[in-house]
Image (tube, rainbow, N blue to C red):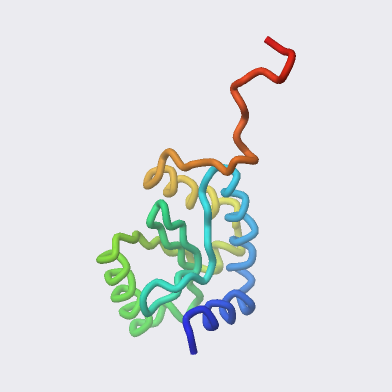
Length: 134
């Protein structure tokens, strides 16, 4: 199965915490932070990725608390770090409890890693006066 096909499958079967956070992360585009979901990165798939900030956001369910899963997560995070990515992880229960707070934490980290993103043209305000003004 190709990475593109697998990414499409993952996008269509997102968990409730992933969907909740995704609806909030999409809003960050107006601030210039383009987020992608279920994005292939080498042998892995990032739950969410902001490429310009090299930031991966992972939502972990209870299975990630198991020692073997935790070790796999550490190996994965290390591999992504060698590619220049920072991974931040949130537990699914925390996302369900307060997705807006998680989004604020992500925004804070984005601003630290990429403080001057380019805003989409639709959200930029012209500094020139409208025709006939000024």
